[in-house]
Image (cartoon, rainbow, N blue to C red; front, side, top):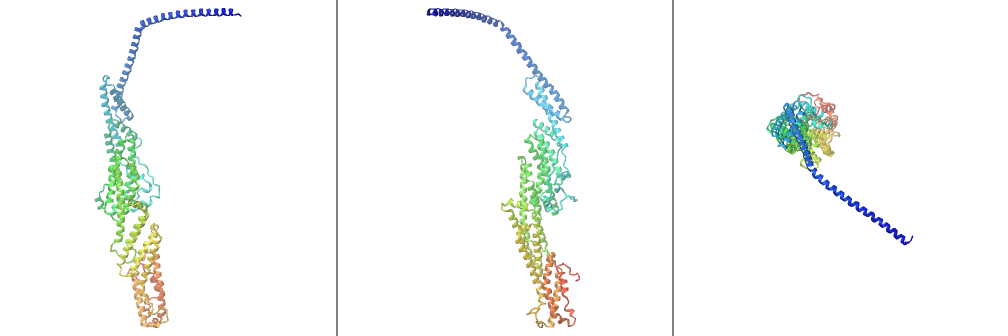
Length: 633
């Protein structure tokens, strides 16, 4: 194709495009004109419809307001209806249907809250006042119901029921007085033989506790805490005190304690120990449990109520302990003081748990104070005992040289002390951080030495030096034997035992020397020995005199020393044998050498009155505590 032809084609194409653009513009202008006409007509239509729209919106709002008013009226009418229903339940009282009654109280509170917020409701004030009056009446009936329910199920606990809750090892024995037979630690000795299991005490039936809790909650919501507090305190405190009185608890002053005979007081102290255990572990623990359940969620009442219920009972129990701790000290009180200290230590954790709140602080501190007071008095009594042993000035003289009552008393005392080893060690630690076992050893050693010092003094009361030695021998032997058979040996040690066994032997040797030396001189030849060949050194008259002197002295020794006593059979036989080993060979030898000089003369039986076998038989009668009037064998 040539250039001219191409140009002609381009021009034709451009002309076609111009025609198309022109037609598009024409169509656009026509559409704008049409749309403009629509806008104008719509605006006119909107203007014509505006009054109708306004009327329709008003009608819709009116309908909405009517619905709201109807609903509000329905709610108000519902509140009136609830008020009538609640009133009917309140008037019937809580006794028949407590749950429904409590629901009615909740409804009244809801009604009061509703009308308090809707003050503009016509007749609202009247309904509000009526509901408040009903609520007040309802709470008053609740108070009566709470009091009656609590009173009906609050009864004193009988002693037998309390005893049934104790472990078998701690129940009273079956003797008529119902007391432990041993006041000095019998319970202490047996306490570990059986498991100590306490059965929890049910003071109020579990099914009643939720009702009491609900009643209490309603009274608290009504602001009647003080009325609730007084009802609970007065009812439960009286029952607690009656339970303890039935058990045997009585209020005793220091003067009452001082006037009592020791046997009576000792029994009362034993009872007090049981009372403390029963009160804390059963009665107070049971009271704490029901108090916590009834006042659950009301901490401001829970602890004060428990404190008030138990305060007087606890005070009565602790006051007796204080009276004992402050009374005049005497050695026999040490064991009961240790028993009392021990029970207070045993109960310490329970006391701290039960009386741990601020409301119970005074009782908790009183219990701690009594524990310390008992510890102090026990320690002072311990010191008094050591001094009393050393200075005991009783004029009691054991005529037969046997074990002195002081010796047996002190040894038994020390034996009992060792039943309280752990308690004594704890006692020492109350006042001293040192080694408690060393302290116990030192105290025991001092008591033993004090006893020996006193026995030395008492031995000087005898005019016969032989009886002095026999008395000391008997008493030191008793001490050594008792120590060897008791736990005291572990503290005092083998060295102590061996030293004192030698002391016993020394006194036995001294007895032989002072008692038999003189009579043995009758059986010896002056300047020689009884077995020598110098028999001519004694004339016939001198031999007669020797036999006569021996007879008189031996009869006198037999008569006197047959009334003396060596209570230990082994020691008695040992002492007789020791005398026989010295006396019999000497007598046989003397009779053998000088007997023929007498036997060939007149009336030989007048001088040789005893055969060696007779002497041996009579020696076996020594130290048997025979009377003067008893005929000789």
